[in-house]
Image 1 (tube, rainbow, N blue to C red):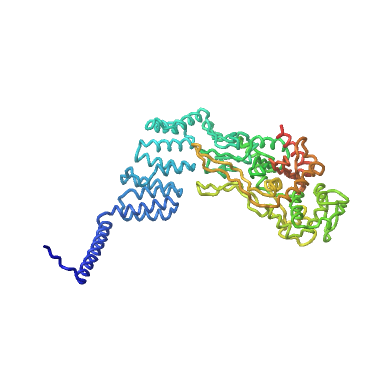
Image 2: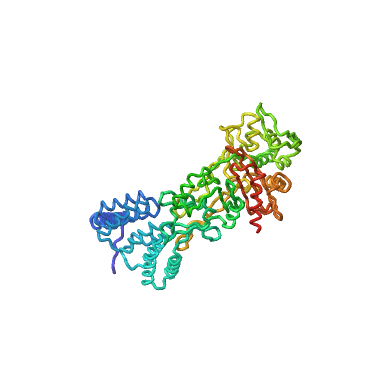
Amino acid sequence: MIKYKPITHLSAKNYYNRKRINLILIIIAILIGLYLLFNFGSKNLKYQLLINSALNNLKKGKLNYAISDFNKAINFNPKNPLAYDGLGSTYLKQGDFDKAIKYFNEALSLNLKYNHSIKHVEFGENYLNAGLYKQAEYEFTQALKLYSIDYKSLFGLACCYHAFGKLDTAIIYYNKSLTYNPKFTSAKKNLAMAEDDKNKGAIYYLFDRNGEPLARYNLIDLKNKRTYMLDSKTAHITGYNDEKRNKVEGIEKFLKDYIPGNKIYLTIDSKVQKSVASAMGWRKGSFVVLDPKTGEILALYNQPVFSPNNLHNPQYYYKIIANKNKPFLNRAIDKLYEPGSIAKIITIAAAFESGINEKNIFPVKCAGSTVFDNKAFFCWKKHGKVSSIEEAIETSCNIGAAFLGFAIGYPKLSEYNIRFGFNTEFDIGFYDKLRNQKISIPVKKSIFPPDDKDRYELAMHACGLTPDKNKQYLITPLHAALLAATVANKGVMMNPFLIKEIRNINGKLIYSSEIKPLKISISPQTAEKIKSMMIDVVEKGIGRKARVKGLKIAGKTGTSGGKSELNAWFIAFAPADDPQFAIAILGDEEGKGMQVAAPIASDFFKALLK
């Protein structure tokens, strides 16, 4: 029979102590082993960790950190090509093409092989999706130097050449891609598109909201590389690219990084634009049309115009330059004008929402002129007895508006100027989330008097007039259209914009517009009251020349001072009960609003009805 030695308290304690010591020794041995492995046994492990950290920073867009990590890897192992290759991609993302080439070539000289660390194909596809074809070209080229039969890289490079307008080269690479993958449907589709573009001799890159072409890049006519389909009718929108004189304006300037190669769709409607150009005729000025519910710019036209298709002709170019009426000037967004009586809708909005008692103001007597603070104040006509706000607006009586201004006061009037977008930095461009950058198309900022020191200045302010040169009241035609649009949209001012969407060479969406409100200017109830008054202005008031049979139009005339002649204004929206169009017409030193601008509106709406 086996006898077991009993386990005492002391022997159990020794047993557990030995186990603890053995465990500690094992951990120490593992740590020492790892230390030796990392520092002496495998330089590649430390190198790879630095590469991984650099690539992670590159992915997150922390480019300075990525460069630092890649350089640390190079210092650790200068003969390993991966870090050089990674630096090439990092500098490419920074836009430093010279450094990108330098490091790509250095990596190749160190015998860089195809690997899964630096993913040139993936990087190239990301650039391709963003419409950044130059960066994509560099990545795909480097990928093909490592693996020359990769059909995705061949396709990507073909897309880049297609975007650049190098169609013969693009066709070669599309076919190469199909050689290694005959079932690659994207390559088949793009090959057919490239052959079609080659037959047309042009690549179309700018379109209206309905897909109607507005501009193309010519592949054959080297004298005139671009053609604008509506020519002068959209000159201030499309702008021009005069490579000979190194001058770029309009969409060509603001969206230069997207041209050519991408398809840019504007909010402009070609039919509306043509109607605007026809209605404006020979009158100098500006005409803007908005969708009041979305803020989309449906038309933007200035007169005089120029022909972007003829700027390559020296005689024509210098004739335009010499024209004192400045045909290149985009009056709609780049010039400020005194608003005159169109600003009275702001005055009456402030009056309605201030809770003033109309009976304490009206009736007022309009004798055609009066005196405020020893200064002469004029109305455009002797209106006699003006009994209400409605009558003051219907007749556009300055005396009536002045007394409204007195009741409102400067603080409230200035508050409503701001509510209606004055002192606001409008920008009709967009923010491209895919590229993480703002594409700015700035609009000159509309301004109002910083204060009104007396009744004369307050009266001028209430009527949309400038009290003196140090207290200017100025607005752009685009902003004027927004005033009408805000009333039409039940008091909500929408953010105006010109770019609807952008797609890359493969039709992939790069950018899509967002419809968003900019300000809640007034209540729906106030907007409804103002709309009713604006309808009366056209039906039986000062804006009768804007009437169109079968169409209810809500409008407001305005007349303001120019340098030598009067500026004519008319803002409106229609149909009044379901507004589709909000407009602003400005006759630059062309006369009175009721005589000049209102008839232009009538011609425009008649053309649309047809």
